[in-house]
Length: 302
Image 1 (cartoon, rainbow, N blue to C red):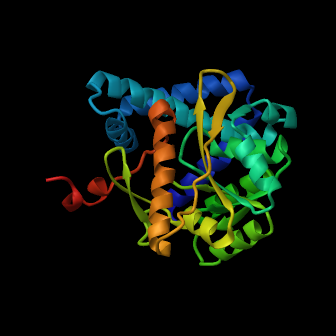
Image 2 (cartoon, rainbow, N blue to C red; image 1 turned 90 degrees about the horizontal axis):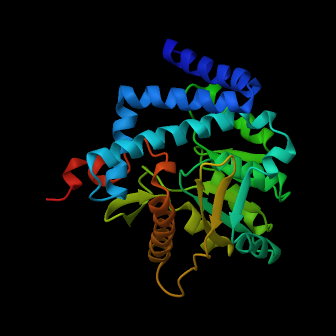
Image 3 (spheres, helix red, strand yellow; image 1 turned 90 degrees about the vertical axis):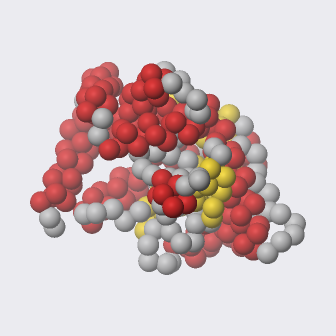
């Protein structure tokens, strides 16, 4: 393990061991302080966040974008402070920490026995939403996690999420899709963060007026298993409670090839994600390149 990897792992370990013990008001203030310091330094992640917001809020002035990126960093650090502290939260704190609109789409879908795929963008705190599903609703679910480096950091994330009641599969290795399909055929729940895919199998979608690539997995799972595909968006509103919405189901088209159906369904997911992101751009934690024009300048507009 390199020195950088050891440092990264140690910092995350410090977060989970120390921040979780802080009183909540202290953790909130600490997160805001760290966010403001990072924002003032204008590192690569902050500049990319601001660039992404420029696509989401076209025509925004430099002052508006600066305010958005500052709010975005505060939202991002709220995610981390909550995540570090979640293992120490009581069941009642988790149950009271989330309110979700149109939850009937999920509960009715599971009651039908065909399985449900929840697809989310990087909005607010998807880990808290998952803990709420397992704790408040009493519904176990399966998800996947990217293999982070160093391996010890990946192990920390897996242990953390499993401690919240999730079954976590590695994103790489080729067996995740089959396991997810089996869970759905058994009438289970699968939750996937699905607004960024840099693999060759990603589906190109129109996203805020330009081309991005999103994962095909949610649409393919719904097609192959008959499971319901539901977009979900999350946001903060200034209170200690995170809000969410379960969007109407993304239907499988009646005609077309598998690839054509996947493209249509993934575009529908992108549209639902865009609705939630446009309403609450500061809660979209996308500090990486997303649009193809940013990944490959040759794909940019003339």
